[in-house]
Length: 103
Image (cartoon, rainbow, N blue to C red; front, side, top):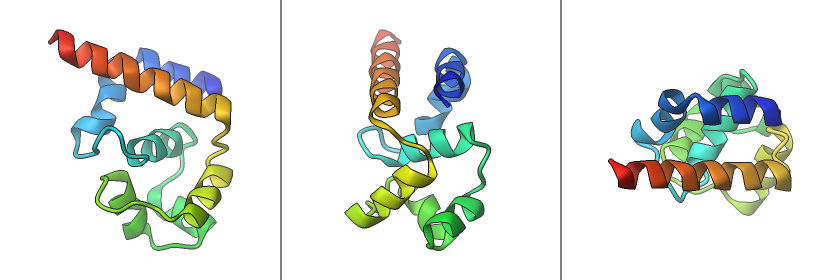
């Protein structure tokens, strides 16, 4: 999992697309999309894993709605989202923000 995240990190065009397509940096949505994609899960598949509708996954990923604490716990389990993964995602966000300010 960590290797997949790092491969997305170094594949800058794909990584930056995660929030340029509507996702708002600062929300958990882009992280959910990145992890879901790294695990090769579709939105419907992830939705079934956490017992919600796929359109709700989409809304979360786009930053339109925030997941409840209970849903975040289910998403974290389904996506294998550990503290170490969270630290990598925060580092990725910081790198992406720095790259944007240089442009």
